[in-house]
Each structure stands twice: as structure tokens, then as C-alpha cells.
Image 1 (tube, one colour):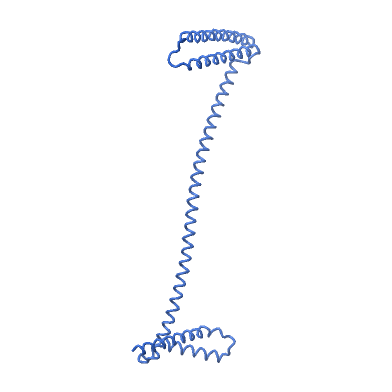
Image 2 (image 1 turned 45 degrees about the vertical axis):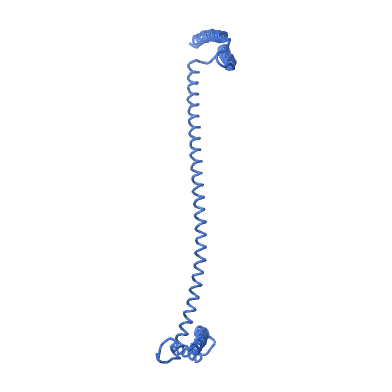
Length: 233
């Protein structure tokens, strides 16, 4: 029994080799353009006979035909299997490449989203800065218009009036400096200083002094303004 199986396998292998050889011949039949028409016709008839004998089951009791058909079919299936495996590998490589490309695209999309968000934040900050600048410009414009209106109401200052205004501003600045110095000295003490009463007297004297000076300056400016208005009339 084992010898019979071994012999059948050997026969099958031989027919597989023969079938592959015949298939190669069949595949090349239409490429022999240099042959004569009669030679081509003989090859076509031979190919048809081989194909019929290897595919069509003429006699189910014919062991030779059965083995030939089985060997050719197995050869075809083997080639189809190899081709299928090759296609699967190619598809796998392509799928892997597509997955890698998809991941790269997803990363690019995420980076683009982050850059877009950063750009939006930057634009929002820029808009806030621009709005703040516009508000400041509008504020300064209103202040400038107000000062221009005051200037129109006051009229053009002459040199003497301008000098008085400068003296008043200087006196106010000196008063502020003196008050800041007193405040700084008082802040150095913890709790009630021992000379609190003296410090309060100094502050009161300073305030009274500058209030009197302020009244004197106001009176001078008012008198000069009235004189200027009478001249303008």
C-alpha cells in the first residue's frame, strides 16, 4: 500500500511538472509570430487537445486522465495560491504604508489645529491690545479737545500769566515733595512716634502755608484773566 501511494505521488509530481511545462507552452502559443500559418495551426490544435484532456473528464474510469486532470488542477491552484499570497503581501505593505501616511497626516492635522489655536489666541490678544490702544487714543483725544476748549475759554496766556501759572505748579510740586518727605519720615516709626504732636504741627503748618500761597496765586491769575478779557473786548 505504501509503495502504491509513493508511486502515485511520484506520478503526481511528474504530471505537475508536465502540466507546468505544458502551461508554459500554451502561454507562448500566441507569441510565435515568426512561424508559418500551418505551424501555428498545429500548435493551436495541440493546445486545444492538451487543454481538453487535462480539464474535461472524458472517462471517469480512466485513471491516467483522472490523475492528469488532478495534477493540472493542483498546479493551477498552487499558482493561484502563490499569486494570492503575493497579492496579500503587497496589500499588507501598501496598507502599512497607508497607515503610516495616515498617522503622519493625523499628526500634521493636530499640529495645524494647535497652530490655529495659538494663532487665535495671538489674534485675540492682539485685538485686545488694539482695542486698548484705541480706547487710550480716544481718551487722549477727548482730553486734548477738553484742553483746547479750556484754552479757548481762558484765552491766550500772556507771559506774566504764564509765569504765575508756572509758579503755582512749582509751588504745588514743592508742597507734594515736602508732604512726601514728612510721610516717609512718619512711616519709619512703629506705632505712635514720640514727636507725633510736633509732626502734626509741621504738617498743618505746611498745608496752611501752601493753601495761603494757592489762594494768592488764584487771586493773581483771576485778576490777570479779568484784565486780559477787558483788553480783548
